[in-house]
Image (cartoon, rainbow, N blue to C red; front, side):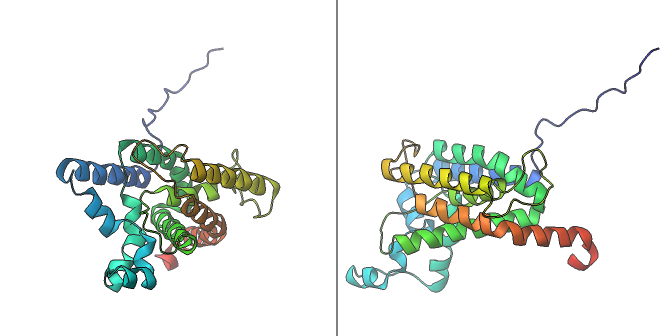
Length: 236
């Protein structure tokens, strides 16, 4: 008996969702633009668009006779800091981490919710960093906090059944992974390990803030995503 197999369909070179590849391309393009066209303007760009806790401290601003800017100018860095990176190693490493974890989140929630999740986790990371480093003049840049939030989702997903319900927050795998992640970031923050040649400090508090935001928001985003799939007309 002869068995006839249909020719295998061509598989795409990258299986990552388009929205994840577009976000990575945006991070790389922004960094390339800064390096090529504004090589000497990094301090000014970081001051304006990086996240600097001292910008929000009235005591620091008044004692140093510095203007913190308008309400909008103070709000923008909560998001814009995610799109700035110190060097190619920094943006490259973040892109490598974003590819698998971002792809998992995008497949589970869809492109629009993926971008919203990315921004919320990054903003949460900045807020936690601000609370724990009030008045600090050290700027925070990079997408690591937002990517850490996506890791929070990944740790609640069953690897061999990604569409299955999320693990409970206090389940053994989630607690174990969380403890390991906190330990790694604390060590990196104290030693600078893994920061790369152009990054002098690891904003580990922002990573932790983004991670726990992702861990906690995974459930609500799951419910919104399921509702959109179940009632696409109403959700549109």
